[in-house]
Length: 350
Image (tube, rainbow, N blue to C red; front, side):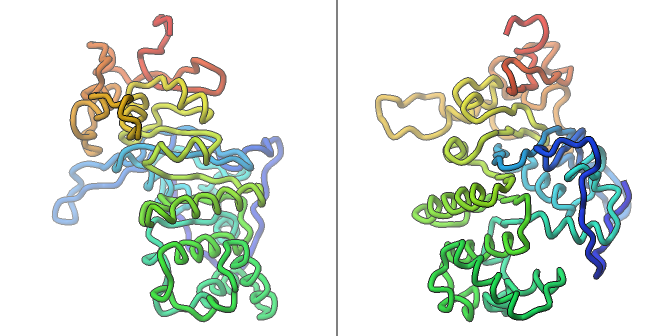
């Protein structure tokens, strides 16, 4: 795939092609994002396989949560979807158009239709800009030249994220805001160009526990009010049942299980998903168990991942000679619920 071009000053709409389902906003197939390792800055000695052959769809009006341990490739996947990383293999199709075919004007339009909510709100906001300037920048860059129109849209989006009264916040700088208020500004900036897709990368992990529910509730309300598609990157399975319609579980760069949220959480098929759910703390002492730790130590190296199923060195249900040798085929035990695991392959009876 060719390098992604820089944005130009022109604006051109990104239109879906004929025959594309209107329900699918973004489709990913066989997507891999590898980063070269070099010695002395010259000699290539390997690759970090951050994303390693994933397939999924993001549907209009739905939230899909991508979950897994730190280092499983969630953030690299998010940045690839945003066009910040260049895919090594595979395709990303947005509203019927392959990102690999985009020219400068199309990249410009794409970035206006896809919002990004970063993990660290303070690091995401320019410290020398006040809130009005932070929210004006994307409007100016994308051709909204009228000052009155920019002011209207800024006030409207600040009201939507509940920074009220608006006049109290327009002249404030990031260091004058709390962590929750900073994240509301980040969300406002992601919304101000009226996108169809929001990618939120661990949007509450840097916030106090008392603020997390407020921010998640805000995101959910905005998503429903605007009929947005939302990709929600998180390592916290305990929040997704009340926040997402679908879940994709990632491990070592691969999606190993995906499906409707209730189906996947109530009946997880992959041993890794089962271990993640078992590790969620339970406040009831009578439910305490001794198996709330993921088995087998640390996740594998993404430079030299294990053969076959990447989870097999830690898997309590290992099938010798198969799991440690062959990459599992993805199967669909129930409608819409897919898993890549030899325990559910052909001939297993699962």
